[in-house]
Length: 151
Image (tube, rainbow, N blue to C red; front, side, top):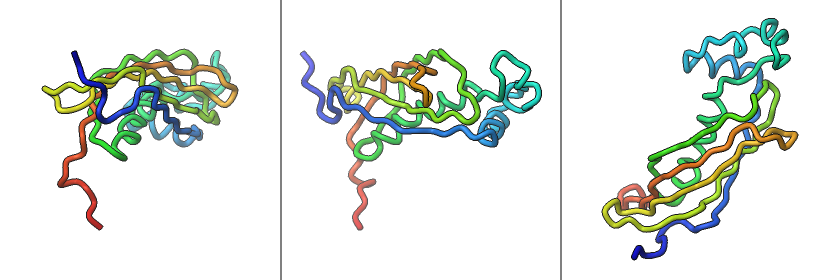
């Protein structure tokens, strides 16, 4: 039988927000080579079913996934292993997205020297509408002693 988690806490919840300006939507889509005019051409996007610029799906999902590394790296060494992301609603330029993850389960895996951690997450816009849902499995290991700040 596996020992209880040593690093993460089941039920641990954390969140962050992201505001999508029109410039960030265009710049991010360009950086990931997503040339869909819905992310670049305001006139084209205004005439679409979305009524304006929308973010490339890679933009909110990248920030959503990165939140895991940002959070756990404050006290441990995280490593993403698996993500299941579902895009439920377009994220529009001007939206503020609230991204939240919750640790559903975690157990110490001796062969990996860390907690195998399962999380559930959501991204909601400022109206409370779900834009993205996701699950993830990450490995959360103790920080190496050499990386501890000695100042």
